[in-house]
Image (cartoon, rainbow, N blue to C red; front, side, top):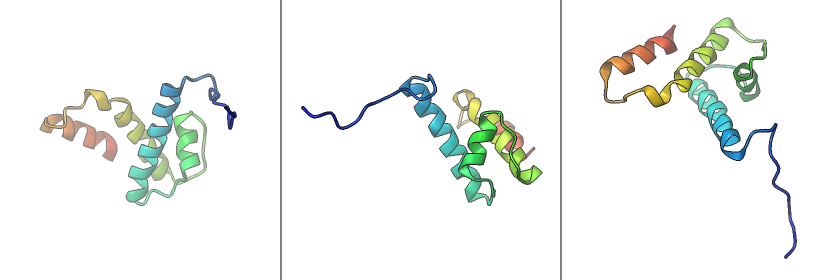
Length: 93
């Protein structure tokens, strides 16, 4: 058998953690891009990682709010109107 590549850990995170983090970045970036948020995927990643970015205050706030919702997504009941309204308010804050 010939080795064609090597699988390595990224930044000390195991594969599941890295996949979750990548999914979080892609989900938040894509959701906000649809709503005309002008930040790049790298800027979204930097905000998630706690770094400062240059951009409009509104766009940065949208990312920060989306992070709050994403981090609580497992607690949201999609069939509960109060949950949907609560997290919609977080997104619109």
